Figure 1 (cartoon, protein in one colour):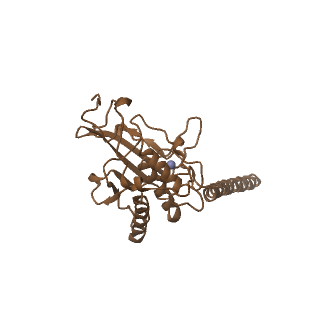
Figure 2 (cartoon, rainbow, N blue to C red):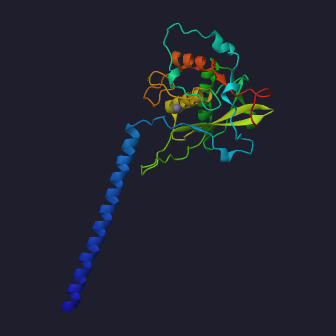
Length: 276
Ligand SMILES: [Zn+2]
């Protein structure tokens, strides 16, 4: 009988220990969740990793394997919107931050550039409408400097914009992958004997309101050819998100104009030695 009682006591102690441990685990998890949320709230994401060359493996077999020689790169006539652009404020540019790709600068030569907005996969039609409206607004903004047109058929699109989380970014030497708020990538392929390109913009569903507006404006800038980042907080192509996102700045347009005065292999073909 005495023996049984002490066994009961031991059981009680053991049970108490289990409950205490479980509580500790719950509390610790709650704390780390709180820290995680806190970081999300106080730190705005950086854009730095939001541009990348399209994945060839995803291509439909028409991606090119050989790059045309640099000597075959030529300039296109400046679109009239950019030719007319005069910066009376003399704000300068950040052209030095824009690096040409192996195809030269990522310049469009057929206007208007066709943009397709994929209808968001959300049940709430109000939210869906809001998303389309916000992204369309940024297309309108850039349309002042480079002719753009929203098309209903994705097959006609030069630039496709999708509400979807970009894949997590794994950095060598770092344990945790980084979530990205947006990602813009391009593919180059041969079409009717000339070299063509196509952009895809992924905008994370985590972006809403003014942050969605800023992210869409920023990524569209990349897709129009600004393949790099500004170090100035007042530019739409600044490398980080800011609390009060700026509109497309004079420096953004000055940079865009300078880019369109450079040479490229894109949009050229026929007489060029494409090596294909
Ligand atoms: Zn960027």
